[in-house]
Length: 177
Image (cartoon, rainbow, N blue to C red; front, side):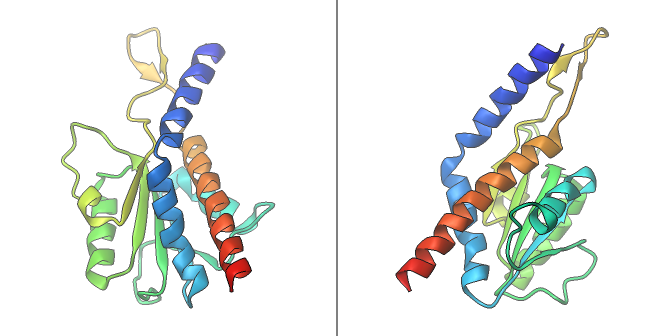
């Protein structure tokens, strides 16, 4: 089972890495807050709050990062950027957040699994969507179903990919100024 899980996880991470242009676009959008007067707000649904914890308290923290719970919009401005992590980007909470952010003209990125069977308005609202590709479990179980949904691992992989690109962009910006 461990070998199946590892193989499947590596396959999902590879699919994420193939979204290189979306990751680049998202990093550029997020870096705009750091070049300007804004902050990067991270919303992590449930266990995906781990992304904010890594961004804030990890070995290489992201500058001007704040946690956002989605409860209030008053602290957000058009200079800020929001990074939303959800298991499924079509869930009701993400749709509500996306509509409100779009109406306030606050740029945002959504990261989560995108199911082809869902009608997904978030893809048309977000500036960038990055697919985690974990819409089914990675490992078959004995009852014919599937198990193992490593959303947090995939989300952290996306975060680190974004952080790497943001650091490159900020380095180029500092060097060019």
